[in-house]
Length: 127
View 1: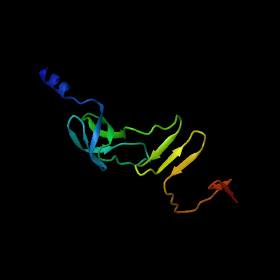
View 2: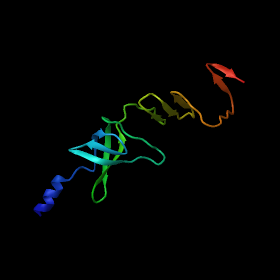
View 3: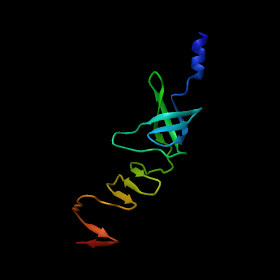
View 4: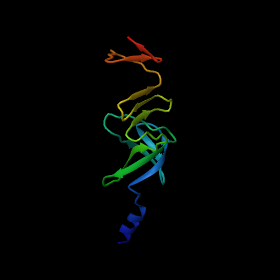
């Protein structure tokens, strides 16, 4: 009985916020103590690496309660219904609920650009 009580007292919460101490695909995070080689988790097709000093959500699962970084604390609040992907340099893609796609930063295209519909450059329509 005493052994179980001790184990329950030492048990970490299933999710908590921590600070990234080591950036990379096997990150370090300061929680109650520092955890190293913490995996990064995210939606399929989305690739990211939190920066050192980011505040991240760490969830723990499985019998061994293996930690996984699930996301960062957001400072930018998108409008309801929009999705915004960005990086610290200011480059970003904003998908708006009205169907508008906004790109910011330098845009490089490797491939073919096809335009169907009108094209406006600096306020002027291009034919």
